Structure formats: C-alpha cells, structure tokens
Length: 69
Image (cartoon, rainbow, N blue to C red; front, side, top):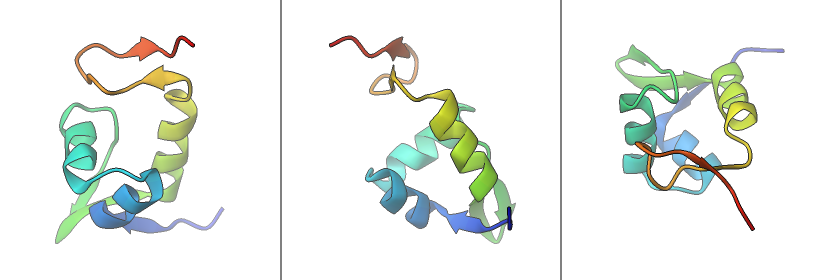
C-alpha cells in the first residue's frame, strides 16, 4: 500500500470530528503522529486506529468502553 500522510485537519475530516478531538487522540497515545512542520498521520496508522477501536466508545478517552446497544 502506498504510504500517504494526512494532516490533523484531513484526519478530522475523515473521522468527521473536530481538530481538537484528533489532537486529544494523539495526546492520549491512541493515534500515533509524526511532526514534519505540523503533525501528520500516516494512512497505515489511521487504518490501524480504525481497526483497533472499531466498536468502542471514545467519547471519554480516559474511560474507553465497548459500545452497547
């Protein structure tokens, strides 16, 4: 798979959240990033994040739970 770098703004648009949420995910170690001028997230990292946290409630990053419906 070709590697691609996303900005925080692009990740926020993909996840349909605001930029602060992406910064919080990075700050809490749930989403890895690298700094090249500004923070960037690789496509592989974003796909792994989506796979690892699928079915989870991330509304409270200090208390991640399974989604219960």
